[in-house]
Length: 379
Image 1: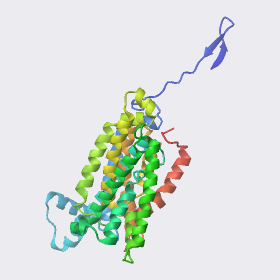
Image 2 (image 1 turned 120 degrees about the vertical axis):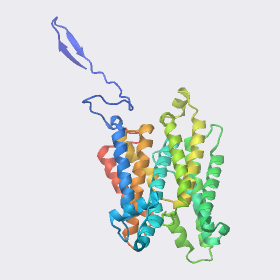
Image 3 (image 1 turned 180 degrees about the horizontal axis):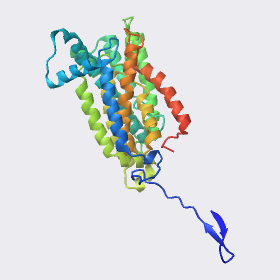
Image 4 (image 1 turned 90 degrees about the horizontal axis):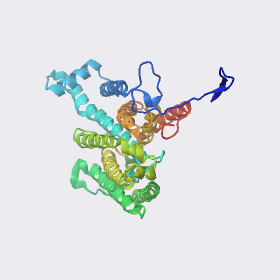
């Protein structure tokens, strides 16, 4: 506020008024916008093209690189029912039967973890939350350990590990849900504390099972699974994960306004007519189910669900309608390239995906955070 002389010898007050900007309002011609005002359609379209290109490149590249034009031709033949030459059968099998389901599963898992991570951070109002903060991954590890160490559920054949991991994840989720309920409902603090305590307990159970195992290689197998990987991907494991992730994305996007309010606290939610406890209960069930499915098909892949939502908020702002559109695309692209690096870095061996996500992603995130002065919530 500044003062200046007027013609009568008095002073005129120059008042600067700041009007809050609606994050969903489209900028006018010539307007300059911060992250929350940046138009989404061009960004979503660009990321979709980048994701499609990443999928094709992820299929073509590997320990044995295939020509890009041949890769595209094999994919087109598989989709349209076209024909290939007899001497191309081996290369076609690598493209369609081995690499295509693996790369597509990387897209689905990366997108799903990014979605669930965004919802979990809003649900517990904690910047450090990720899809595994509620003990789900530890429960899945116990289920997988029972298969690896003691050969349980072998009647399920190749699906034994996935089914056991999913069952363990759901059991852990139910335990956390029942233990976290109190007179005040399902509060964020009780959820986080109960989830962390349950995770420690289930990690101890996993360690004890490995210690008592009669198999000497059990520890290595369990460790590799807990670090995550897509090496067992096939066309049978892809549909369920895809459908679950797609349904979750629709449900979460439709609840994006409620997530914005829930992030402000239960008192604010109640004043705006939203039942915070009921919404948190529904989010818990949804995130637990999606996380259980993703862990069952890929193991425990860390970092993606924690940091990708924050990276997206740096660019598009904190509104969940924007974050839930962009985060799945970024998460899918990120995991495709991480999986490719795991395949080629020490070929013919494969690195665990969870190791590379942390080694690559953490420095990138810290650099972005320091440059943008980021705080949780987009401020």
